[in-house]
Length: 217
Figure (cartoon, one colour):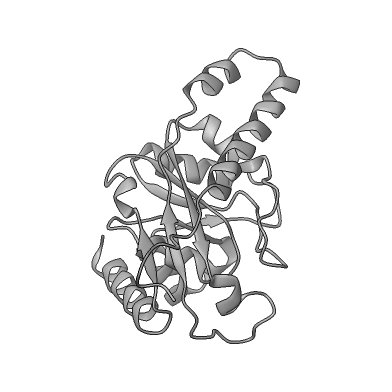
């Protein structure tokens, strides 16, 4: 972590600890080095910093390319390992930037659902994350956040001091599907992208809150 990222990391850990009384489960499942995709459900603007603050390594985040045009904001985003993504045009440049970070041994947070949930429930996965997984060699760690929709979902203007939790799953490997993707026909390739996305989303859904934790209400 560079100094500015470390300060932000400490700030969010303090915020989640004091304001949201957070709980973090199984962060040791996230390797401290090598290319990693953290694939999380998406319920709130709190999700990216929550997922990133729970692990002890620098994480790459996605941010709108237009934000990098502002000198101070752009400087902060670059130091926070943010990847510029054009969300209005084609995604080729953004995909290339993501793959470059993974190839360099970085970790990045992606949301298979593509957008925040409207009702707090898990949404179907879109094939975009499947494309990224197949094009890379990175491990995939499924992640599930709890409580962020209630604390700061779409229907809230301001965050509420409710408990949030983040749980990291076991790393997933997709060697067989990656090998098949190199030789299969284009129709099957599209099926593979969706299959990978669905398997990741199923792994996220399987992560249940730790109800047996005596510290929880």
